[in-house]
Length: 158
Figure 1 (cartoon, one colour):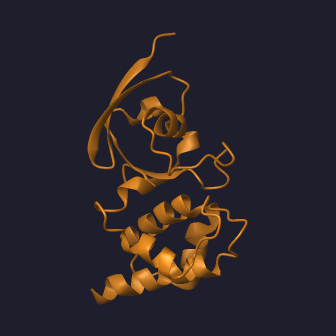
Figure 2: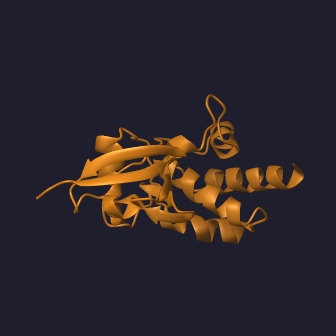
C-alpha cells in the first residue's frame, strides 16, 4: 500500500510526513516527527497520556488517524512553551510538585490548557471533571488540580 503525504501544522509550524492510512497520529508524532512528549499509555483512548489539541479540540492521538490531520492544526505538549519560557501551566506544575514519574504530565498539561482556554474561572469540580480522562498512578490528583486552579487565578489577575 502506498504511503499518504500529509501537510499540516504541528505546534504552529508547517510539517509534512508520509504515513500509512492506518497509522495513528500518536505513532507519527512519536516515531516520524520525534515529538515524544505525547505518551502512549493504553492505545484505546482511556488514559489521556496521548492528549493533543487538534483544531482546538482535546483529542487522544491514539484515536486519530494521521491522515486526518491533512490541512489541520495539531498542538502537542512541546508546543506549549515559547522557546525557553515555559507555559504557566508547565511552570506551576513544577512549582507545585504536581508530577511524580511524569508519564501522565503531558496529557494533563494539554487538557488543562484546553480547559483554561475555554474557561479561566473553573470551579474545582469543573477542573476535576475536565481532567477525569487523564489517569495518574502516582500523584493522587490534588496537586494537579491545585496547579490548574492557581494558573486560572493568575490568568484572571493578568
